[in-house]
Image (cartoon, rainbow, N blue to C red; front, top):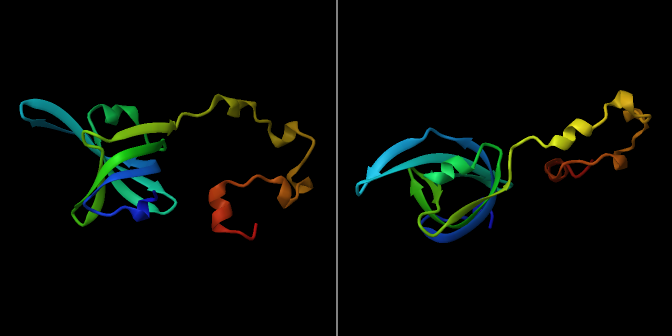
Length: 137
C-alpha cells in the first residue's frame, strides 16, 4: 500500500516508508501506567504521513531508517492523517541509517584509471529516485 492510498478511520494499513523526522518524546500516565509517545513523519514515493511511535518503538527507530508498518490504524488529527500501530500493529526496521563500512573501500578518481570523461551515460548507475524523476537520462 502507498501512503496516498491510506484513508482516515481505517485499519489494517501496511506501508513501507522512510522516517524523515521524529518529534519530541512526550511522557504520559494512563490507568496508572507510565508511557511515552513521539510523532514521526514518514514518506514513500507517493506522499508523507504522521506515525505515532509508542514506548519501545521510539528507541528502535532513527531518522532515515526504512521501516515496514503493518496493521496500523489511520485516524485524522488536526486535519492530518496519522498512523498508529496500537496493540495489534508492528513496526519493523528494514534498513538502518547507519553508515555502511564498505564505503571506506570506494576508490577516489585518482586511484582509478577511468575518469568521468571516459564514462557514457550507460556506465553510470542512477538511484531509482532520479530515474523516476527524469526518464530522459
